[in-house]
Image 1: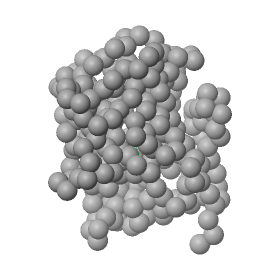
Image 2 (image 1 turned 60 degrees about the horizontal axis):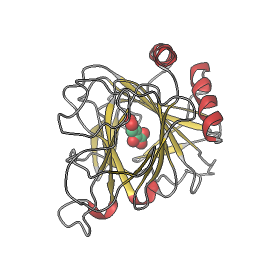
Image 3 (image 1 turned 90 degrees about the vertical axis):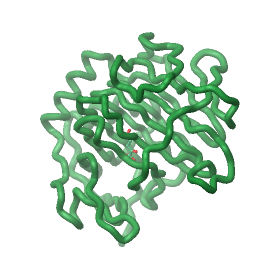
Image 4 (image 1 turned 180 degrees about the horizontal axis):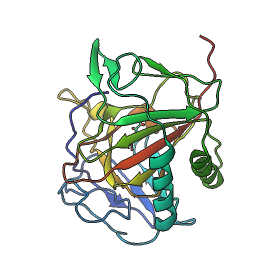
Length: 269
Ligand SMILES: O=C(O)CCC(=O)C(=O)O
């Protein structure tokens, strides 16, 4: 889970309204824009923003396609509603206590304990358990603000999720390393709905065969900007082939809260 920031250049072809396809490198830079990111949030790299500033609420979203990559991105909440939800999240979400090995605040990766560079909370149906990097979490019961977001997600995706993992990034130094969401408790082939509030951040997908020095293939990473009030629906088989990360962005000074809604199976231990 603890990984170096990937370089975030990516090739991009826009195919029709609202569809981005990504493939092997053809040259050039850029990235897939998420819409409502303002100045000062980014990495300083050149990017294409075909729709910057354009509203995408309502039925208007974007499909993001590549080799095994199948996602949909849209604004789920308008700015005023998203601001209100962010305030409620800041007030009501209870994060796991920090810096206590075996409980939270640290993760056990390759035999070592690492501090988590963000805060984490888990909410969900009472019978569920979720093991993440060697630590098993029991979810807190649903609270109204999370139910509200979950219901909106269900109304636009048709999926009812029973679990949510919340990450709070205090600023651009907080991050999450490259990983796949491949925990055994996830319902096979179920989508993951990622809803973001607060600072707009880069979110990077990297194909599993194009990682590291000995990469088998050269497939450019795909960088999205996840805006305040947005929904990124990651559909099967995205998590089989693509790793994702939220890299450090030193210019981002404000907090971001991300909620990944998941379908988790009750597993008898
Ligand atoms: O904060 C994000 O957008 C990513 C969160 C994530 O990758 C995860 O919860 O597995």
